[in-house]
Length: 136
Image (cartoon, rainbow, N blue to C red; front, side, top):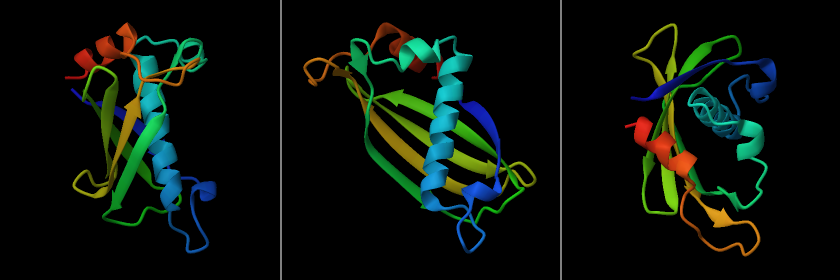
């Protein structure tokens, strides 16, 4: 079941044309990812401290269907899935709260687990595997 994160568009999210700047939608998706982890009981301070492993994003893509403007409210659905023992992806769907039929954008990020000392791939931590399992 997807996790849903609600987000209001603020003036600082927009560009000179008054629409959300493309990179800011990826930032909003990352906010939703962090909220999904926290909602599942993961301690974000410990998770992102990078003690023995880290989960850098190795690929990101985004498609836009409709412009997003300051003051509008959106629901960002977070749909994670495991790809390999060391890699997972998150699909994001961004919908208007005023009109749920209005999908403004869709994004994907791919994360790889690495050992912080050696910078080599390592299996996903148990807490991430549990989060992925609960998200099915």
